[in-house]
Length: 276
Image (cartoon, rainbow, N blue to C red; front, side, top):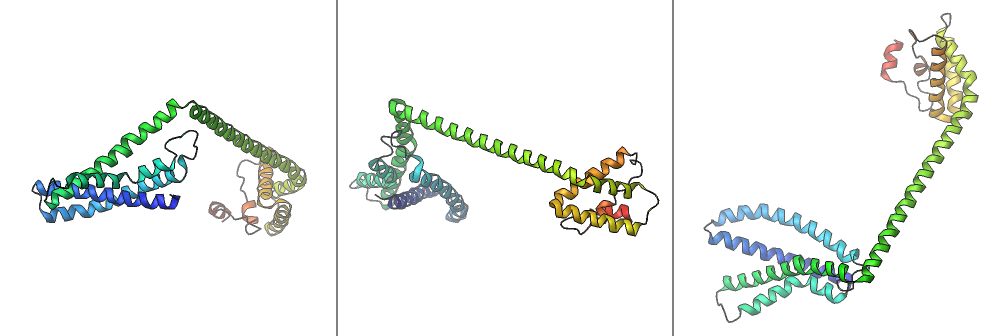
């Protein structure tokens, strides 16, 4: 059977299994004396819960059918087409067995349907919950080739992850090294500009309009050299020079105001308030 056919059969089998579960549940509640209007109210919530469970289950199963057992060496039995067909048709086989078992035994329709439903539930539970996990464990334990192949595959996966991690670390180190080199190059170019900006910030005898024009030209030059990152480095260098010159007390960072609108530079609101 093709993968598409297997998925379709498995979907149909799961729907049939859920219908049988719902039938058994409703019949049990009805026999217990629960009224039909209560059953219908419960069935609405039950249908939603059942839909969610079926969706999650089918997602997991479709992933399994599509590729979880592609290693035939590790799964010599459960990866075969015969076992896969047996697995996905288990609900129908159980229903057929229940149907054959009830022929000639009971003539009541509801008891006949109950027998079919119980056969479906029993066979599905036996195959999906007991037989399949046990078969997987036996494959892993009894087959030496499967154990060796699994160990080798895990080792290869681990080695691949370590290689990818090393590549990421090398890439990050290379980026940091280039960034440090670029900042050093910028520092040499920006040193005169930083000294001039520090002078504009610390001097008391200055024409603010002329200072703004000079600072704007310096900011535009920094933007042309290296964009926003270069402008930030120039601002940091300027503030550091001001502190070294004893301008810590009462120092206002007018640079953020002067450079507002140059490239991607935006003045934070707090600096706008200080400038006012």
